[in-house]
Image: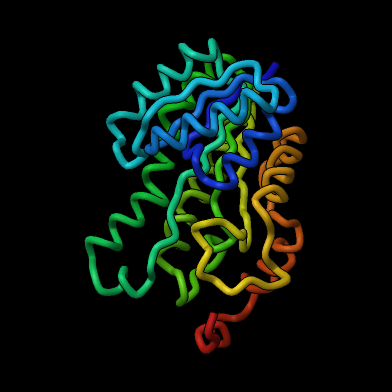
Length: 245
């Protein structure tokens, strides 16, 4: 029976992933800001077969509250086998360009708050010399694009942080997984026109579960995004700067 801590548990991808683990009889501790949504999700996960589901209220931007939230999770679960961090927003790029305050807030939400939370949870897994830290970053972090470079910069920071942490913890039995979804059809992207490159939260969740089971270090989801981003990363800068991406 796996014991799983999910931060940002009310996101569509987190909920879909939690359902997979509930079906296998795992114990889960959910963290999020919306108390009513947490309760509804917890009730649903119990019906789906979870051995136990507990919840805690946490605003990820309240970095000072991370340690106590993690301690409560450890108390509820006994120990943590998997940490899934699925917290984030989709910033309005023009609004960021118009305001330093908005830019810094969105960078903190999508970048530094995640880095802080992961840093706070590392000692528990390190003390056990086991477990997985899985964090949702984004393909947007692979190269800055004019359409979302504040979001991309935050995710690039997360991706680079996790790369170093993975190297740091690998010899100690703790795996660090960077999850890089492409376009996902969620409430956060409801206003976007959908196409062939879009995936469902359930498809992303299945990919996350597979990557955790394989103790992968990085997972582009769906997998074809690896090829797309390989091309984008290798476009020469003098050409790339003329593209509208």
